[in-house]
Length: 397
Ligand SMILES: [Zn+2]
Image (cartoon, rainbow, N blue to C red; front, side, top):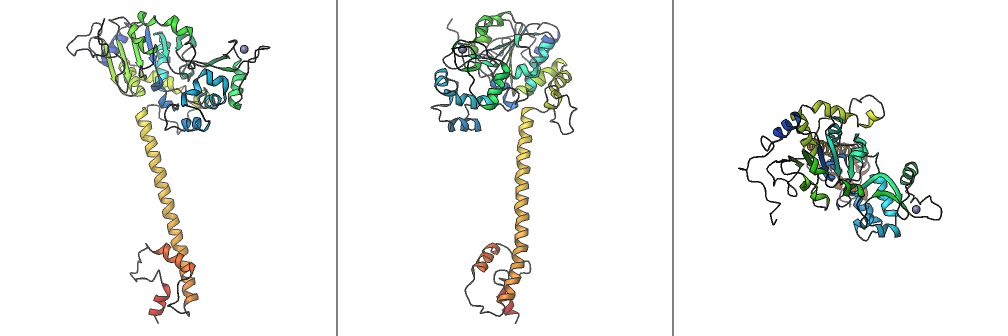
């Protein structure tokens, strides 16, 4: 009572359950078989390296697209009352976010690996992107706290709507209507909109973290309630591991809290490696590649599976640098072409002007020529030869 939950645990306080507050100690705890009921809690941070755009960020094209749709504010796209009046902006966004467009990250595959090993008690996710499902985590192991694209229904009578028709509607950006006679309600994916209740599934499972023997929190700011209070449901001696770019919520306030402050993909690779699972994890993640899902062999230039988000970001920077270099090269090529072209032109002008008055004003063509050439140094050191060729002609007389 009255305790400051955000206070970090004193360094001198020994852990109750773990040997130490380190990743290695968490891995040892898993390897010795003490973690058999792991709860995982995730947020948008585990999907950013998949390329899922953040609709809230003003820097993304998605936001710009929404702005074009004349929304009163960005979040209106997820407002149930706004949707009733104008469902089109949501369907424009849905086409962008609909499952199938993005590949799960290795973090999603890590959760699948936990399930395969029979260690996953439940995954609580705030994400609506279904990438956990795409990675192979079965639906019954997932609590989608904010709903997802996995199912869809009528907003009035709540009747389910067929998935194949939904896919068609999303693709064609058509707003689907309820199939029940005399209903005609709008249909939308079962994503929780502002003004809607969270799924009953969330409330049914809300106390489940109390049964867990390990809690892994990844890629969430733990700023949205009631999701943010889930890690607090874990028992006092239950180790809690945070893999996130920064400390969040009250993670780090308990004796068995371990903070791994880095991007999720790098963090899960480290955890997998410490558990001796890294090869297994990489192989599992490889199965999510588009070529693997299409039943094709690995192409020569497939993305390096061992790359972290930071490395991928560096790749992007390198790619961009190459693009710029290429463009610069193009400019140089064009410049060379232009120089040759100008030289030829100058030669023609020189011939034509040879017998004319050298003091006459420049013609337009000559002016252009001089402008183009003005920065060019004369390799022969011949002064204004390249600008006023007839002067050279005259001087040679
Ligand atoms: Zn209906």
